Amino acid sequence: MAPGARNYAIVTASYWGFTLTDGALRMLVLLHFFHLGYSPFVLSFLFLLYEAAGIAANFIGGWLATRFGITRMLTVGLTTQIIGFLVLSALSPDWAAAFSVAWVVLAQGICGIAKDLTKTASKSAIKVAEKEARAENAEGRLFKWVAWFTGSKNAMKGIGFFLGGLLLEFLGFRMALWTMAGVLALILLGVVLSLPPMMGKSKASSSARELFGKSRGVNLLAAARIFLFGARDVWFVVGVPVFLYASGWTFTMVGGFMALWTIFYGLIQASAPALIRRSADGLSAEVPAARLWSVLLALVPALIIAALASGTEIRPDLILVTGLAVFGAAFAINSSLHSYLILAYAGSEKAAEDVGFYYAANAAGRFSGTLLSGLLYQWGGLTACLAGSALMLVVCSVTTFLLRSTREAEA
Image: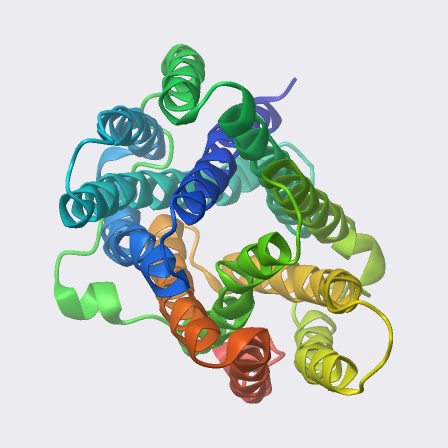
């Protein structure tokens, strides 16, 4: 196997393992503490530092990956996740509620740093590996590689959701965390032994102005990403699992559904290159496609609200499940297009910095969506969460229409 393709395969496999445990962690924390009687707002609060830490981790991580190499940042991310699991496993049922919440928030913050350091390093590695593959006469792989990486990663996250519910039910909270820490330790060893230590190392930006001075395309994509992922998490993080659990679903049923949805979403992401017409310049067909799919996605939450308010005899949880499937398909294509476009717009020499900046915006969207998910659900239930999602998607669509579809204009 050629070096570029080999490195891509290793990075993808290691990120699969990381994402499996990250998805399991989400379900472990959410279901464990909801079962203990925590309110929707407190549940969302448990994830806030996780998301907030990701903003800084992505932004600084991109600079660090350029400065010290992608492989080093990947190992730092995996190590940090193991530490986060061990800190969370030290939680004691004898502690006061306020101290327990603070402890979980701290542990989640550590895991948030780990996740986004690992993601920034992994996605940056694709740009580097694709450049190597292009030199090996392997043109046109970037969209396919990004789509497969992102889609397969989300499929693994879906399996992780199911695994989290399963581990909680059969192993309990603490033993599940120890098991996942052991799996990550094996993945870490594989990364250290198999990837070039200096992969992706380049001259990093030397000033804040240079670090923030991104191209118009990168800036607009970052803005659109904030609202795209805020629109997903505003109902997905707390609203959907709590609504389903309150409707009589068990831990395993909730975790299983979230798993199937995310796997389905990942499969659609991986299939995006076959669904989107390609252009020779990489932008003139792809940008209009991103505009179209952003409009279609914005319609879905509004239609779900209308269905829930229609007074039909269909059970509300079944309406939600059906609507979420439609939302997942449209969201997956939007996400895959955006993930491709950021690498298409990014410069090769400092791709890690551009990717880090973009995924810092991604984390900001998740942060706002997570906070609003708990607040809106507690205030107005699932309908309020869906209304927030629809408004965010309108803003995302408007921003996407500002993207230029030619490289000459972008330059």
